[in-house]
Image (cartoon, rainbow, N blue to C red; front, side, top):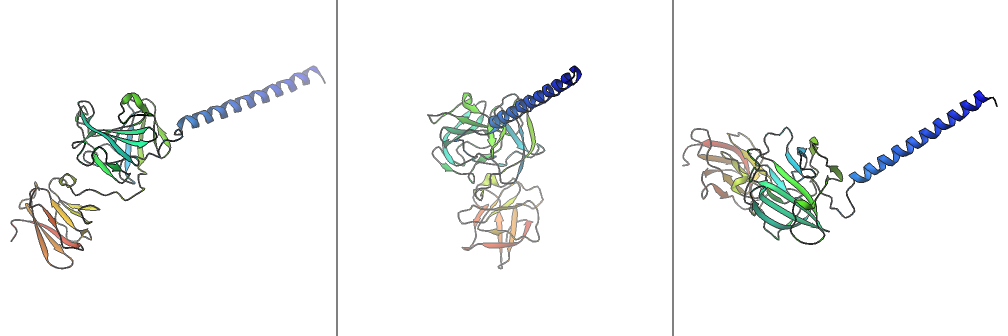
Length: 297
């Protein structure tokens, strides 16, 4: 073989060897990256702590691996329900000047979640020792503590092999549905909540009815789907078992609401804490129309 052909053959061999090494390095790097993003063995299958199918914006800012969560597009997060990320037991409920109304939930195997800046007192929906699932509402998005005037949920996943109380030194990268959301200064603008394992219900409480609205709860005991309106509704298929009329309706003469029922008859709801709530007949009723008016007859 001539020296020229030998040099060419050697160069071809070296190039092939280099590509092989390069591909091997790339594959190894990709594998390492995938392993880093995968949740560690034994970590619960955490889901976004929000209603099934809703879309959220996630930000790490400068406090990764914690996340600040707001509704997709940012506005309108204040007062939205917060659910447990996975089954567990409420291990702490407290006020802190920085985190405001705060909850911690123990999920077993040393894993915890923490929820900051909740709107109501941390024990308004659940208590220490309460058993929760992804269907359990534990609070509402708020801006308590040092959240400023920005309603958002600061959320953390933590690991501590022993004990019932964790702090920020125990934070770990956050995973939702097995996908990691971590890294300084990162933002995910449209993440859909997969917290859909069980039907999520809204407790029968006045703070679940916006100011100036009338709300109807469909299940015995005042839970279930909530139908809300803040204006006249000529037709509605919302079944109801309990109701709540929150005072403060802006419409003139709107301090009473007439509810016409498909089964016949009407019911008049008066505003206020005591007389703004009502039980309907056993078996429930179906709303035919809602009309704002003056004094009930």
